Length: 405
Image 1 (tube, one colour):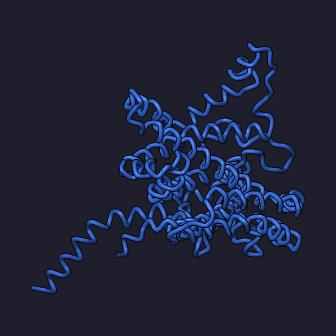
Image 2 (cartoon, helix red, strand yellow):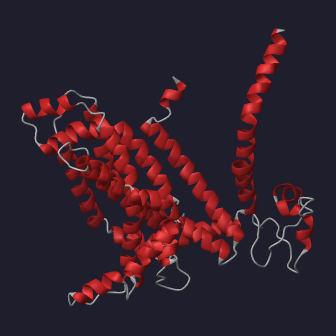
């Protein structure tokens, strides 16, 4: 009876978990395996079909499965096979990124971040102490000044030029990281500002303003359609330039300039994402006891001191997971950039456009160039990078800590 009861429980658990496990295998594990294998092959527009005589291909590629195998014989192109050497696609993707000059350039750039890393360590150290010798503002301002001084002293511009000449991979990933930093910082700043305003009891019509300010997040499911509206705003004959012309100012071709096009995409995606931060921070602010601020006011603490010493530390458990989630989604952003600029403007032939972020670049490699092997190699590298970054973020924020206690 005990053994049967145990098997019955296991069967019931398996029945409940079965659909989830099947979905994970079908929509997560299998695409990862297929992409990893494709990244090792010469699959492109000249080799579109698989060689179904290979054991690995016959198992992983759906075209070789019995119900689809007839499609494998279509076309006159030679079937794709594994590359020789095996990691050729990966070496083509990273280019000259691991040469001696490139590694030295990486080292110079890393040195510029050391003051910020030290400031972050000292910030955590001070959080564990009863008293502070240096305020957070002074600490980070000093670190920022030192970082800027190192940028000029080490000639980081030349180091960046060296890395830019190594190939497309560095340019695309670097621009994406810059986009993520700017987008997350602006979304957080705007969301925090609006959340503080909406949390004020003296604000009339707070419910109405919360509803209106949440609209961009609600329309994010139509990001491509709404991004076309932003494109219309910043066209050479668009709304922005027409308004400027009304005041006698000649507007520029916003989407044909690399810097302005990049800024337009950042601005548009910030508009989509700030309500998420606003709602998260607003909920966190409402959990902060009012008597804490009353005690701070009695001690003579001003608004900025209350914000940096009370508000931000108390809402940090809500901010950190939201920041991690927003950073990951920003890194995978596609619709806004592609709808507004299609990855452009392109500054020189054979080079990625100013808004060719990682997903846009991978999309164009597959659907425009049909270079499947190189595109999947690029995707595998990004997957490993995001996986490592996510693990670090989980450890930093301790989001899953309660699940193991």
